[in-house]
Amino acid sequence: MNQDISDCKTIRVHAPATVANMVCGFDVLGFCLDEPYDVMTLTLLEGTSDIRIRHVDDHDLPTEPSLNVAGAALIALQEELETPVGFEVVIDKRIKPGSGVGSSAASAAGAVVAANHLLGGRFDPTTLVRFAMCGEKVASGVKHADNIAPCIYGGVTLIRAVFPLDIVPLPAPSLFASVVHPQIEVRTSDARQILMQKVFLKDAIKQWGNIAGLVAGILKGDKALISRSLEDVLIEPVRKILIPGFDLVKERSLAAGALGGGISGSGPSIFMLSADRATADAVAGAMADVYRSMGIDHHTYVGPIAKGGVRIVA
Amino acid sequence: MNQDISDCKTIRVHAPATVANMVCGFDVLGFCLDEPYDVMTLTLLEGTSDIRIRHVDDHDLPTEPSLNVAGAALIALQEELETPVGFEVVIDKRIKPGSGVGSSAASAAGAVVAANHLLGGRFDPTTLVRFAMCGEKVASGVKHADNIAPCIYGGVTLIRAVFPLDIVPLPAPSLFASVVHPQIEVRTSDARQILMQKVFLKDAIKQWGNIAGLVAGILKGDKALISRSLEDVLIEPVRKILIPGFDLVKERSLAAGALGGGISGSGPSIFMLSADRATADAVAGAMADVYRSMGIDHHTYVGPIAKGGVRIVA
Image (cartoon, rainbow over all chains, first blue to last red; front, top):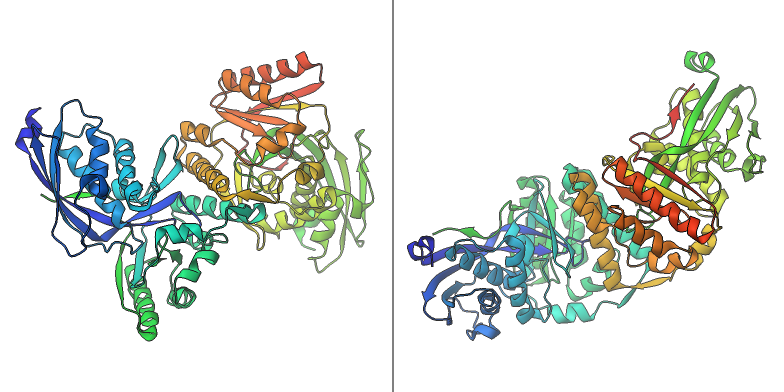
């Protein structure tokens, strides 16, 4: 144990929400939001390998480490330490589970980033993503990284490949996101099952033209190109069926000036990107109006694409 | 008719070879070579809308304008002129037809770029691509733009969408291409027919992870990322069957230091990219060795990814 560790045994982090898929970038792109975020407090426990989890919210999530997203991520991290250490984890989950903005990813990413800090920063970000993916497996059965990576790196991230893991951080374009979370349930597993196993090659070609355009637009700072590329001919037409009001939200958002957007992760949240905050506010208003008129409870968030991921606050 | 036109009635251009698909970028990416190139001489004919085509090579290509690639492209251009003009076209085709390095695209692109110059540059590059695509339709039955666009723009081009046409020019990475053309025939139509109409979504996801990585690598100048992204899980495994020696060429090229590569267009040419000319020369040597040992006639070319497309030389 080095000096850094004994000097700093407790740490608090904000683990932000993230938007996976980014319309045409199914399973490979994601970006980081400023809020909402979970507040997580980790304390290093020496001389034990116990993981003790406590929730200070109303979500009734499991506290058994192997069944808890943060716990499973920390177990994966512990397995690569020579000296056993334990963690006390206090979670104030402010990102509603099942909302489609990376609630489970925030817990997993927040836990491993905080733990890594307590351990003197011995693991690189890609390794932390790998640990956190074990948390995602607990949540959804799949070790996907498209929320975890932006939650740890910030900005926009590309998961070029999963085996072996190859993460390409892209700069955060100066865009603002509007997110609406209608209070309906879409299970990630249902959203997966509804997809076709096979797709037409001609549609796949359209999709990779768009993802190539989106990545080029992000790297060139070309908002018009980003806007034209935010088109999904494969996943959205199928999944939007699970989200009442989707088409109207999209139509009204574009009319309010959004560059484009679509389903956040596997839904039910919907995100839109805009060139400035005023437009993003107007878009969020238009989104809320749709669900208000449908009598569906909802929350909205507006903020920039965040340049950084999990933030250490104390 | 303005002054520019009467001042300059004959023009000579070099219309270069191009590599379409770029491994994972099937139907959407292409890049421009320095050589081989066709030499085309166009003369403006006033008071007529005749197109007179003459070949000064041994390829026995059609001279009837509507059946000739350059002719069909010029007819498309003529249709958007108010005043009828004609063209005399002399073609010295040095890019062997059917070699898979954009021979037909060079004729079509060279013709419209030269004609546009004779007409005072009234059409923008995207419009020229649109005209030249009518030439590609004569050659292969499909109005594809993935050779035409790099031949006109130079560098690497992304065809984000075909309808409506959306071309995204990318900067030319400072890489060198090695191309081997084995003297065997692969018909574009056969190469199309061999492809599956449907593909697994999980494979399509791998492919768009790679194309996103390739575009990011090109824009960031990250050669290691370009190398990792030059992987094609969908098209190459099927099409390589039509190209004897493909696997060995690839294996030997990578062993000689290539970053990666694959089938050029629909083949039979194979291209590899390298970080410097010395490596590209060694790679071309390794490629040639394979076909020499197989007793298959072949040509090789080595050169940078060309920053410019069709060049005006006189």
